[in-house]
Length: 177
Image 1 (cartoon, helix red, strand yellow):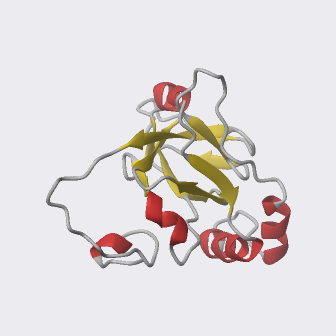
Image 2: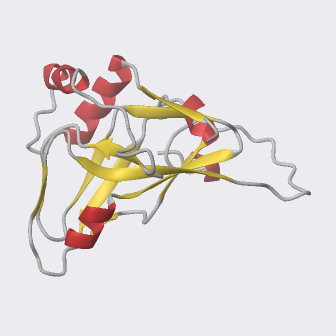
């Protein structure tokens, strides 16, 4: 197996800013002290078995989703990877199968240059409870809820792009948010 990437945590300063901004007014404790307590418990993505393709991403706190509800989850994780690779984020198979847990953007695409963006490449995962049986979904802190799969990609022979990323979501099309 090629070793092409390394996961790490965003800085505690970045985490606190993102945590507070994401959960302010949500019912999830969102103060700086709360952010610091959660930061100390964050887990980096891991494969469950030697044959697993996906790296499990873990919920930082308990999450409760009623049918149709969504939540944007700051993971505290960033990834540095070879330039010719991409990390695709998808729901964990069991939650997708049992509850139709989905990502709001279907598949998350983490580009290799995202690591160097202004937000430290902080990976957020927005999930939606799309259960057709209308069951609430509870994900416990520390439970795997999504997985990331590394893929190698190529570019066309006439590709001449030289633009550099400087931002987070939507920054590659001029809609930095």
